[in-house]
Length: 123
Image (cartoon, rainbow, N blue to C red):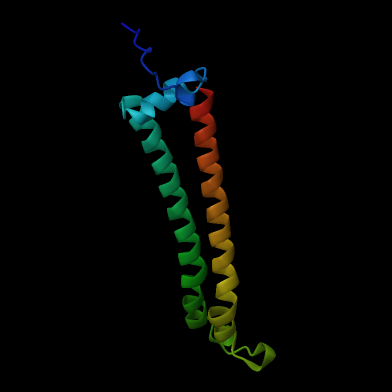
């Protein structure tokens, strides 16, 4: 009787790779244990805090302008470049302001995510 060929074994590159330092923390995150849940909640809390702060900057920055024009009508009557100041501030200057806040928010969110990833990979 001819000998049967040996069973084929599937080798996956991930199985052959040596364990890295961040495996324990990564496992905590994947299995959603108490520690992993606390890490994710911390990241979400940080991101929410940043979003609320940026929203507050926008609300105060743009929301205070109508109040300023009501309290100081002389400011509202100013005509730089032949256009009333409220139109210039709310119709033109608001967009670069919103773009800047959006850029800062994106930059800070990405930094938070990088810090979180570094923390997970270190431990």
